[in-house]
Amino acid sequence: MTLFQALALALLQGVSELFPVSSLGHTILVPAVLGWHNLDRSSVSFLAFVVVLHLGTALALVVFYRAEWYAIVRALVASVVRGRLSADRDERIGWRLVVATIPVGLLGLIFEAPVRRLFGSPAPAAFFLMINGLVMFAGEALRRHQRRSAGREDKPIERLSYAGSLAVGAAQALALLPGISRSGISMVAGLLCDLDHEDAARFSFLLATPVILAAALLEIPRLFVPAAHVVLLQAIVGGIAAGVAAYLSVAFLTRYFRSNDLRPFGWYCVIVGAICLILAREGMIT
Image (tube, rainbow, N blue to C red; front, side, top):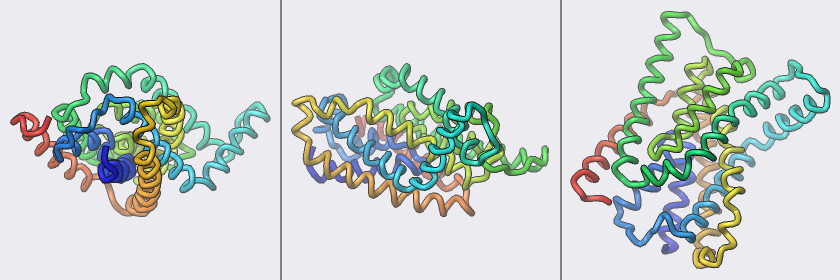
């Protein structure tokens, strides 16, 4: 892996992990389109490099939401010490994040390795990227229908039901499929549970923080394998670049979703996915 490739993959990871366009799908498709056949995604050194990128992304989210995480963790600890729940807003958000993390964590531990083996090539990634775009279109359409036919109104995160929290967590687990976006699919679930776009994005990013951080920490031993040392410089540069890109991405998206929706990202996913699927079917990318 060259330093240029490391920097490009890091920026790609930092942006696409939070934008609703699938980081896993892009890390499969972009190297294939650019002909970077020297990158072996199953090698120990590449997996160690990816661990550092995820650490950089997770730490950027922690820093961005540091004040909110401090309040949430403090409220959760207080509720455990007290032995009962209260009406505190941060506590209610915290327990909803705990509930939503359960399906993400369980499904990730069980299915991540088999899913990546089955679908870790350009054609499936391109196909699921198209599906990701269609899901965002469908989610926006269903949300508008809910407002018109049932008169449903937006509610804040702390009023999200525990069943709704589980639904958002289960939806985020679908990001195990390359091309399905963690933030996109969980935002759609949040919208259908009556969150507005800004709160759906915030809940998605808050939920992604412990999930990405835990996944990276579990993989830390990969960094100490001798074969991983060959990408030490690339990993350091990549981790910093991924963190900066992730921080700028979440700062932009939190403002974007105050007055915009998912449809532009849906168009991007459908168009890019279709082009890459055609290229893969024609044998032009492998």
